[in-house]
Image 1 (cartoon, rainbow, N blue to C red):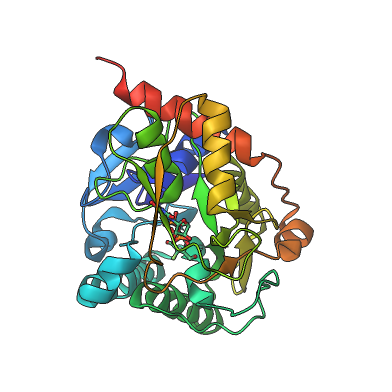
Image 2: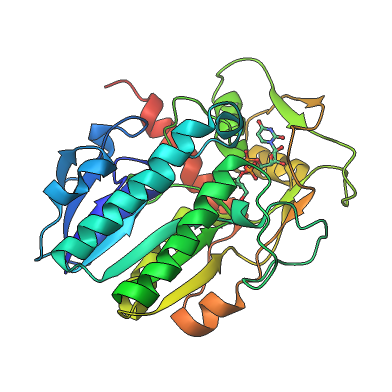
Length: 320
Ligand code: UFG
């Protein structure tokens, strides 16, 4: 297929692009490089440096489907600078959908987020029919796009699959996480393990969980990427469907720290810190729908996820 991947210079977009190229697809990446890196775009893909609002100039009727990753994705920043989130995530996506309509592109796979659910206030796995009450502007913009896609599928025959990611980590096919502002747990722990100095922080030790630290569902980016291939195969013009992507199991912050120590064999100094504003105690996916309807199965363990992230982090530190 001929595919447009928005945000293909970012973390998840670059991994999915590498997988798509390996499957023989032809990929054009649209990325404004505001947070992505040109050299993260896998070899074999064509990079067009442009804003989502210029999508009409990049799309053409020969494109079979769009995979849409381009977005602002820092929860904290979305609280202090919500305009960036509404402009890129919502207005940018609207421009992309208008371009798709104009050029007759009828299939789209969207990178959504568990942030659409907000804080479920329980430790039960979250299904797609759970109330979606975002706790921050980032989650609100992801949910707004889900609503936008649903209305476009009804009105304009767009076929869309929205994939709500839980916590993505790891690396695959030489592509991995390279955020200039790193807020995520696994890369922060690996930076310390690699001798980056200081200690990593454990945000919150008084949650109502088995060891007091927050529990998340950590999914290997390779498993996540494979779900996009399944979604591409299943997306049908005129239909809209949400799928949660997670392993269905959770690990506490302390369990992830232990996994990093085990896998790297390095000491990982940590210090306890207050809770981070807005962090729910437990977020775990119910992934039955993706398994059943997409035929998708996450298979990689937390240790494999950490090991692949570690290998990628070391490769980035190696002298050129
Ligand atoms: N944490 C630490 N120390 C750190 C970083 C994180 O203790 O240095 C903790 C957090 O408080 C949280 C857990 O580790 O309890 C995971 O934090 P991440 O920042 O790695 O991920 P989040 O669960 O906060 O965020 C992820 C996605 C968001 C999405 C959110 C809800 O990155 O985009 O899940 O779906 F909004």
